[in-house]
Length: 305
Figure 1 (tube, helix red, strand yellow):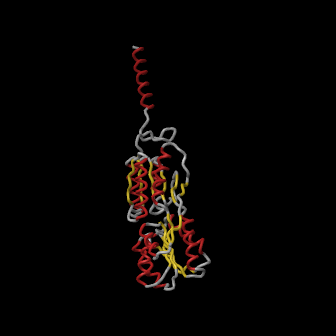
Figure 2 (cartoon, rainbow, N blue to C red):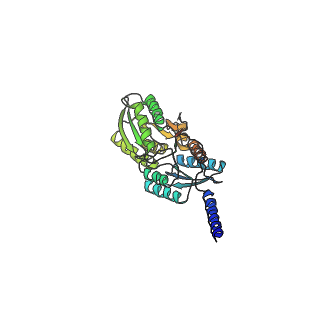
Figure 3 (cartoon, rainbow, N blue to C red):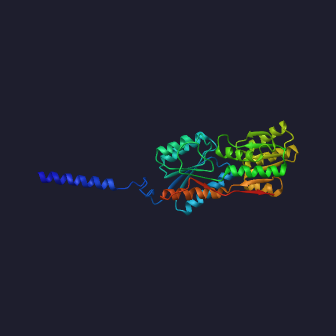
């Protein structure tokens, strides 16, 4: 009887050891790899109603396919609340990593923290998060880009010129950084008569520019923090019959066409496809246990007439 009892205990102990040694397909091993054949990456993007982010998402999808990973892209539609809900859905789907292109850098913090609590790593793309832990940030240097635009506007308009700025989504790091860079280049050298938010939107860019021109008819140059707002501003300027310098940011196809036609002075090229590709490459490298940079910069340049 005693031998039988010892045999049963030994059998149970062996079963427990075997169960403990089985590796969960959803947990990272000691080297940092998920141990899964196909990595599943979630991507919460601020809006797909903007050509820049469409190109960025296409770059991400193409590189995910090339690297043999699955990608799930969700569109926040420029709604911070929807983005928070989208990230929760990605967490419930059990993705291995979440890429986030924030609508609002401050508001997205709670979503990042939710992913942190679930043990899912986060990488921010193009815009940063003010709160929560991220393993890397993939973006152009928006401050440097804003300064590029400011230097060129100053060169074209001259010191003392009355200028205006169309700002992006309030609270987004891109709007904040591009504005800071622009102001660092022109502060004290031009007369900034108006700086208003148009939420990175073409329609709002048109309306806000109309209001600016009514209040300040002597505006000589405008810096728009993205091309969509710049293109809206061009429509308002055209209707006013004025000749005003317009510089945008992103170098989208529509903006490049206007530059070629001589209707728009310049745009800062961010290379969104390269940002999307770099985001996926960084995600895959991290999930495979490799060390990644905290900030992965993507080159930018000024495209002008």
